[in-house]
View 1 (cartoon, rainbow, N blue to C red):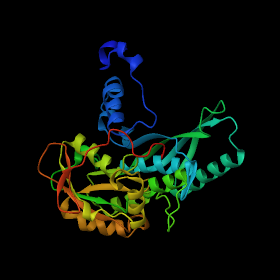
View 2: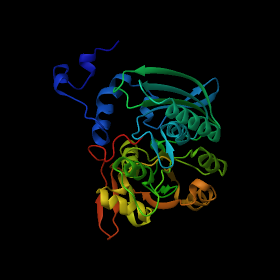
View 3: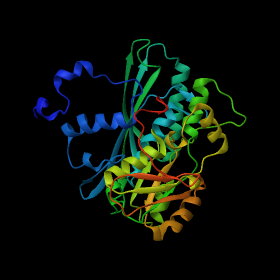
Length: 348
Protein backbone atom coordinates (compact mmCIF):
# COMPACT_ATOMS: atom_id res chain seq x y z
CA UNK A 1 0.00 0.00 0.00
CA UNK A 2 1.45 3.42 -0.97
CA UNK A 3 2.30 5.98 1.67
CA UNK A 4 -0.66 8.36 1.38
CA UNK A 5 1.24 11.19 3.05
CA UNK A 6 3.90 11.01 0.32
CA UNK A 7 1.65 10.35 -2.68
CA UNK A 8 -1.03 12.95 -2.02
CA UNK A 9 -0.11 16.42 -3.38
CA UNK A 10 -2.24 18.19 -0.76
CA UNK A 11 -0.69 18.07 2.73
CA UNK A 12 -2.79 16.16 5.25
CA UNK A 13 -2.67 19.17 7.58
CA UNK A 14 -4.51 21.23 4.97
CA UNK A 15 -7.51 18.93 4.65
CA UNK A 16 -9.56 20.47 7.49
CA UNK A 17 -9.64 23.75 5.53
CA UNK A 18 -10.14 22.26 2.05
CA UNK A 19 -13.83 21.78 1.20
CA UNK A 20 -15.61 20.63 -1.94
CA UNK A 21 -18.23 23.13 -3.05
CA UNK A 22 -21.75 21.99 -3.96
CA UNK A 23 -21.99 21.53 -7.70
CA UNK A 24 -18.22 21.74 -8.06
CA UNK A 25 -17.01 21.01 -11.54
CA UNK A 26 -15.07 22.37 -14.46
CA UNK A 27 -11.42 23.23 -13.83
CA UNK A 28 -11.66 22.65 -10.09
CA UNK A 29 -13.04 19.13 -10.50
CA UNK A 30 -10.36 18.28 -13.06
CA UNK A 31 -7.70 19.49 -10.65
CA UNK A 32 -9.20 17.36 -7.89
CA UNK A 33 -9.18 14.28 -10.12
CA UNK A 34 -5.71 14.99 -11.48
CA UNK A 35 -4.05 15.78 -8.16
CA UNK A 36 -5.82 13.45 -5.73
CA UNK A 37 -7.46 10.46 -7.39
CA UNK A 38 -5.23 9.89 -10.42
CA UNK A 39 -1.87 9.72 -8.56
CA UNK A 40 -3.16 7.10 -6.14
CA UNK A 41 -5.14 5.01 -8.63
CA UNK A 42 -2.59 5.35 -11.44
CA UNK A 43 -2.42 2.52 -14.00
CA UNK A 44 -2.20 2.31 -17.81
CA UNK A 45 -5.97 1.91 -18.26
CA UNK A 46 -6.82 4.94 -16.13
CA UNK A 47 -4.16 6.91 -18.00
CA UNK A 48 -6.25 6.64 -21.18
CA UNK A 49 -8.20 9.65 -19.82
CA UNK A 50 -11.26 8.76 -21.85
CA UNK A 51 -14.99 8.23 -21.19
CA UNK A 52 -14.23 4.62 -20.38
CA UNK A 53 -11.39 2.11 -20.30
CA UNK A 54 -10.66 -0.29 -23.15
CA UNK A 55 -8.81 -3.48 -22.26
CA UNK A 56 -8.03 -6.97 -23.57
CA UNK A 57 -9.78 -10.04 -22.19
CA UNK A 58 -9.28 -13.59 -23.50
CA UNK A 59 -8.28 -12.48 -26.95
CA UNK A 60 -11.03 -9.87 -27.28
CA UNK A 61 -11.41 -6.21 -26.33
CA UNK A 62 -13.92 -4.81 -23.87
CA UNK A 63 -14.80 -1.31 -22.72
CA UNK A 64 -16.07 -0.38 -19.28
CA UNK A 65 -17.51 2.85 -17.92
CA UNK A 66 -19.40 4.09 -14.88
CA UNK A 67 -21.36 7.22 -14.03
CA UNK A 68 -23.57 8.58 -11.25
CA UNK A 69 -26.66 10.71 -11.88
CA UNK A 70 -27.91 13.35 -9.46
CA UNK A 71 -30.07 15.47 -11.76
CA UNK A 72 -32.56 17.96 -10.31
CA UNK A 73 -35.47 17.91 -11.07
CA UNK A 74 -35.93 14.18 -11.48
CA UNK A 75 -38.31 14.67 -14.42
CA UNK A 76 -37.68 17.13 -17.22
CA UNK A 77 -38.91 17.72 -20.79
CA UNK A 78 -37.53 14.91 -22.92
CA UNK A 79 -36.62 12.47 -20.15
CA UNK A 80 -35.97 11.78 -16.48
CA UNK A 81 -33.16 10.57 -14.27
CA UNK A 82 -33.86 6.95 -15.25
CA UNK A 83 -33.56 7.29 -19.02
CA UNK A 84 -30.64 9.67 -18.48
CA UNK A 85 -28.78 7.05 -16.41
CA UNK A 86 -29.02 4.53 -19.25
CA UNK A 87 -28.18 7.00 -22.01
CA UNK A 88 -25.20 8.42 -20.11
CA UNK A 89 -23.34 5.16 -19.59
CA UNK A 90 -24.30 3.65 -22.95
CA UNK A 91 -22.97 6.80 -24.65
CA UNK A 92 -19.72 6.64 -22.69
CA UNK A 93 -19.16 3.11 -24.00
CA UNK A 94 -19.96 4.26 -27.52
CA UNK A 95 -17.34 7.02 -27.21
CA UNK A 96 -14.79 4.23 -26.75
CA UNK A 97 -15.95 2.71 -30.04
CA UNK A 98 -17.63 -0.16 -28.18
CA UNK A 99 -20.99 -1.80 -28.79
CA UNK A 100 -22.79 -1.51 -25.41
CA UNK A 101 -24.05 -4.84 -24.04
CA UNK A 102 -24.56 -4.87 -20.27
CA UNK A 103 -25.33 -2.42 -17.47
CA UNK A 104 -25.47 -2.49 -13.71
CA UNK A 105 -27.83 -0.15 -11.88
CA UNK A 106 -27.51 0.99 -8.27
CA UNK A 107 -30.14 3.15 -6.59
CA UNK A 108 -29.82 5.38 -3.53
CA UNK A 109 -33.43 6.03 -2.52
CA UNK A 110 -34.53 8.71 -0.09
CA UNK A 111 -37.08 7.80 2.56
CA UNK A 112 -40.43 9.19 1.44
CA UNK A 113 -39.83 8.93 -2.33
CA UNK A 114 -43.28 8.35 -3.90
CA UNK A 115 -43.54 4.86 -5.33
CA UNK A 116 -45.28 6.29 -8.39
CA UNK A 117 -42.16 8.36 -9.15
CA UNK A 118 -39.88 5.36 -8.67
CA UNK A 119 -42.08 3.25 -10.94
CA UNK A 120 -41.96 5.88 -13.70
CA UNK A 121 -38.18 6.10 -13.41
CA UNK A 122 -37.65 2.33 -13.48
CA UNK A 123 -40.02 1.97 -16.44
CA UNK A 124 -38.12 4.63 -18.38
CA UNK A 125 -34.84 2.82 -17.68
CA UNK A 126 -36.29 -0.42 -19.04
CA UNK A 127 -37.50 1.32 -22.21
CA UNK A 128 -34.16 3.13 -22.71
CA UNK A 129 -32.17 -0.09 -22.17
CA UNK A 130 -34.34 -1.95 -24.66
CA UNK A 131 -33.93 0.80 -27.27
CA UNK A 132 -30.14 0.81 -26.72
CA UNK A 133 -29.89 -2.97 -27.04
CA UNK A 134 -28.43 -3.46 -23.56
CA UNK A 135 -29.44 -5.61 -20.61
CA UNK A 136 -29.41 -4.50 -16.97
CA UNK A 137 -27.94 -7.61 -15.39
CA UNK A 138 -27.11 -6.65 -11.79
CA UNK A 139 -27.76 -3.87 -9.31
CA UNK A 140 -28.23 -2.67 -5.76
CA UNK A 141 -30.58 -0.49 -3.69
CA UNK A 142 -29.94 1.55 -0.56
CA UNK A 143 -32.31 3.78 1.41
CA UNK A 144 -31.13 6.94 3.18
CA UNK A 145 -32.90 9.17 5.70
CA UNK A 146 -35.50 11.68 4.60
CA UNK A 147 -33.84 14.88 3.43
CA UNK A 148 -30.49 13.17 2.68
CA UNK A 149 -30.89 11.97 -0.91
CA UNK A 150 -32.89 14.39 -3.09
CA UNK A 151 -35.36 11.63 -3.90
CA UNK A 152 -33.09 9.30 -5.81
CA UNK A 153 -29.51 8.98 -7.06
CA UNK A 154 -28.61 6.38 -9.67
CA UNK A 155 -25.26 4.87 -10.62
CA UNK A 156 -24.91 2.83 -13.80
CA UNK A 157 -21.84 0.94 -14.96
CA UNK A 158 -21.55 -0.62 -18.36
CA UNK A 159 -19.58 -3.13 -20.41
CA UNK A 160 -19.32 -3.09 -24.18
CA UNK A 161 -17.53 -5.10 -26.86
CA UNK A 162 -14.92 -3.48 -29.11
CA UNK A 163 -15.32 -5.17 -32.47
CA UNK A 164 -12.46 -3.45 -34.32
CA UNK A 165 -8.76 -2.76 -33.87
CA UNK A 166 -8.89 1.06 -33.88
CA UNK A 167 -7.59 3.01 -30.89
CA UNK A 168 -10.25 5.66 -30.35
CA UNK A 169 -9.23 8.25 -27.79
CA UNK A 170 -7.52 11.61 -27.21
CA UNK A 171 -4.02 10.26 -27.86
CA UNK A 172 -5.03 9.33 -31.42
CA UNK A 173 -5.88 12.93 -32.37
CA UNK A 174 -3.57 14.22 -35.11
CA UNK A 175 -2.86 17.59 -36.77
CA UNK A 176 -5.23 18.17 -39.66
CA UNK A 177 -8.09 16.16 -38.15
CA UNK A 178 -11.57 17.50 -38.83
CA UNK A 179 -13.73 18.31 -35.78
CA UNK A 180 -17.38 17.30 -36.29
CA UNK A 181 -20.39 17.40 -33.96
CA UNK A 182 -23.61 15.45 -34.50
CA UNK A 183 -26.14 18.22 -33.85
CA UNK A 184 -27.22 21.43 -32.16
CA UNK A 185 -26.00 22.30 -28.68
CA UNK A 186 -27.46 23.16 -25.31
CA UNK A 187 -30.95 21.70 -25.24
CA UNK A 188 -30.45 19.38 -22.28
CA UNK A 189 -29.12 22.03 -19.93
CA UNK A 190 -31.69 24.64 -20.97
CA UNK A 191 -34.59 22.16 -20.70
CA UNK A 192 -33.62 21.43 -17.10
CA UNK A 193 -33.03 25.08 -16.23
CA UNK A 194 -36.45 26.02 -17.60
CA UNK A 195 -38.14 23.56 -15.25
CA UNK A 196 -35.89 24.39 -12.31
CA UNK A 197 -36.45 28.14 -12.59
CA UNK A 198 -40.08 27.98 -13.71
CA UNK A 199 -39.34 29.62 -17.06
CA UNK A 200 -41.63 29.44 -20.09
CA UNK A 201 -40.51 30.02 -23.65
CA UNK A 202 -42.53 30.44 -26.82
CA UNK A 203 -41.35 27.08 -28.11
CA UNK A 204 -40.89 23.95 -26.01
CA UNK A 205 -37.25 23.08 -25.36
CA UNK A 206 -36.74 19.37 -24.73
CA UNK A 207 -33.59 17.63 -23.63
CA UNK A 208 -31.53 16.02 -26.39
CA UNK A 209 -30.98 12.98 -24.13
CA UNK A 210 -30.64 9.92 -26.37
CA UNK A 211 -28.55 6.83 -27.01
CA UNK A 212 -25.98 7.64 -29.72
CA UNK A 213 -24.45 4.15 -29.86
CA UNK A 214 -26.36 3.29 -33.04
CA UNK A 215 -24.99 6.36 -34.78
CA UNK A 216 -21.42 5.52 -33.74
CA UNK A 217 -21.84 1.94 -34.94
CA UNK A 218 -23.01 3.27 -38.32
CA UNK A 219 -19.87 5.40 -38.53
CA UNK A 220 -17.69 2.38 -37.74
CA UNK A 221 -19.60 0.22 -40.23
CA UNK A 222 -18.86 2.88 -42.88
CA UNK A 223 -15.16 2.19 -42.15
CA UNK A 224 -14.47 5.79 -41.15
CA UNK A 225 -11.07 6.16 -39.50
CA UNK A 226 -12.33 7.65 -36.24
CA UNK A 227 -9.50 9.02 -34.10
CA UNK A 228 -11.45 10.26 -31.08
CA UNK A 229 -15.02 10.58 -29.79
CA UNK A 230 -16.23 12.50 -26.75
CA UNK A 231 -19.79 13.15 -25.58
CA UNK A 232 -20.47 16.75 -24.60
CA UNK A 233 -22.14 16.30 -21.23
CA UNK A 234 -21.14 18.32 -18.16
CA UNK A 235 -19.23 21.39 -19.31
CA UNK A 236 -20.55 21.16 -22.87
CA UNK A 237 -18.55 21.39 -26.08
CA UNK A 238 -15.93 23.75 -24.64
CA UNK A 239 -14.92 21.52 -21.74
CA UNK A 240 -14.87 18.41 -23.95
CA UNK A 241 -12.51 20.06 -26.43
CA UNK A 242 -10.24 21.43 -23.69
CA UNK A 243 -9.96 17.98 -22.12
CA UNK A 244 -9.01 16.42 -25.46
CA UNK A 245 -6.55 19.20 -26.31
CA UNK A 246 -4.81 18.92 -22.95
CA UNK A 247 -4.56 15.12 -23.10
CA UNK A 248 -3.41 14.97 -26.73
CA UNK A 249 -1.16 18.07 -26.44
CA UNK A 250 -2.67 19.26 -29.75
CA UNK A 251 -4.22 22.63 -30.57
CA UNK A 252 -7.86 22.52 -31.61
CA UNK A 253 -9.34 25.41 -33.58
CA UNK A 254 -13.10 25.89 -34.03
CA UNK A 255 -15.30 28.42 -35.82
CA UNK A 256 -18.21 29.77 -33.76
CA UNK A 257 -20.23 30.52 -36.90
CA UNK A 258 -20.29 26.83 -37.79
CA UNK A 259 -21.58 25.64 -34.40
CA UNK A 260 -25.34 24.92 -34.56
CA UNK A 261 -27.41 26.34 -31.69
CA UNK A 262 -31.18 26.58 -31.99
CA UNK A 263 -32.49 30.12 -31.82
CA UNK A 264 -34.74 29.41 -28.84
CA UNK A 265 -31.80 27.88 -26.96
CA UNK A 266 -29.58 30.82 -27.85
CA UNK A 267 -32.27 33.22 -26.64
CA UNK A 268 -32.69 31.31 -23.38
CA UNK A 269 -28.91 31.37 -22.85
CA UNK A 270 -28.91 35.15 -23.32
CA UNK A 271 -31.71 35.55 -20.78
CA UNK A 272 -29.95 33.31 -18.25
CA UNK A 273 -26.47 34.71 -18.93
CA UNK A 274 -25.12 31.38 -20.15
CA UNK A 275 -22.69 30.47 -22.93
CA UNK A 276 -24.07 27.67 -25.17
CA UNK A 277 -20.56 26.27 -25.56
CA UNK A 278 -20.55 25.30 -21.88
CA UNK A 279 -24.16 24.06 -21.58
CA UNK A 280 -24.50 20.29 -21.12
CA UNK A 281 -25.85 17.90 -23.73
CA UNK A 282 -26.85 14.25 -23.37
CA UNK A 283 -27.23 13.18 -26.99
CA UNK A 284 -24.38 15.08 -28.60
CA UNK A 285 -20.74 14.17 -29.23
CA UNK A 286 -17.68 15.47 -31.04
CA UNK A 287 -15.74 13.31 -33.49
CA UNK A 288 -12.16 13.69 -34.74
CA UNK A 289 -11.50 12.13 -38.16
CA UNK A 290 -8.87 12.69 -40.89
CA UNK A 291 -9.69 15.69 -43.06
CA UNK A 292 -9.87 13.44 -46.11
CA UNK A 293 -12.74 11.51 -44.50
CA UNK A 294 -14.71 14.50 -43.21
CA UNK A 295 -17.31 14.45 -46.00
CA UNK A 296 -17.86 10.69 -45.69
CA UNK A 297 -18.19 11.06 -41.95
CA UNK A 298 -20.75 13.86 -42.31
CA UNK A 299 -22.75 11.80 -44.79
CA UNK A 300 -22.79 8.76 -42.51
CA UNK A 301 -23.85 10.86 -39.53
CA UNK A 302 -26.53 12.80 -41.40
CA UNK A 303 -28.11 9.55 -42.58
CA UNK A 304 -28.97 8.72 -38.94
CA UNK A 305 -31.81 10.47 -37.04
CA UNK A 306 -29.41 11.59 -34.30
CA UNK A 307 -26.88 12.96 -36.77
CA UNK A 308 -29.09 14.92 -39.16
CA UNK A 309 -27.73 18.19 -37.78
CA UNK A 310 -24.07 17.12 -37.96
CA UNK A 311 -21.65 19.95 -38.72
CA UNK A 312 -17.94 20.42 -39.39
CA UNK A 313 -16.89 23.04 -36.84
CA UNK A 314 -13.09 23.10 -36.90
CA UNK A 315 -9.81 21.28 -37.22
CA UNK A 316 -6.71 20.25 -35.31
CA UNK A 317 -3.92 22.76 -35.92
CA UNK A 318 -0.18 22.16 -36.24
CA UNK A 319 0.72 23.73 -32.88
CA UNK A 320 1.25 21.24 -30.06
CA UNK A 321 0.35 23.40 -27.06
CA UNK A 322 -2.87 21.82 -25.79
CA UNK A 323 -4.98 24.93 -26.42
CA UNK A 324 -8.45 25.39 -27.87
CA UNK A 325 -8.89 28.53 -29.95
CA UNK A 326 -12.04 29.85 -31.58
CA UNK A 327 -12.82 32.29 -34.37
CA UNK A 328 -15.80 34.24 -33.02
CA UNK A 329 -18.89 35.33 -34.92
CA UNK A 330 -17.31 38.78 -35.43
CA UNK A 331 -14.06 37.34 -36.76
CA UNK A 332 -11.89 37.73 -33.66
CA UNK A 333 -9.84 34.85 -32.27
CA UNK A 334 -9.77 33.86 -28.60
CA UNK A 335 -8.72 31.00 -26.35
CA UNK A 336 -11.52 28.74 -25.11
CA UNK A 337 -10.82 27.71 -21.53
CA UNK A 338 -12.50 25.44 -19.02
CA UNK A 339 -14.71 27.18 -16.48
CA UNK A 340 -13.50 27.18 -12.88
CA UNK A 341 -16.88 25.81 -11.82
CA UNK A 342 -20.06 24.63 -13.48
CA UNK A 343 -22.57 26.91 -15.18
CA UNK A 344 -25.39 24.53 -14.32
CA UNK A 345 -24.86 22.09 -11.44
CA UNK A 346 -27.01 18.98 -10.95
CA UNK A 347 -28.01 18.53 -14.59
CA UNK A 348 -26.72 14.97 -15.10
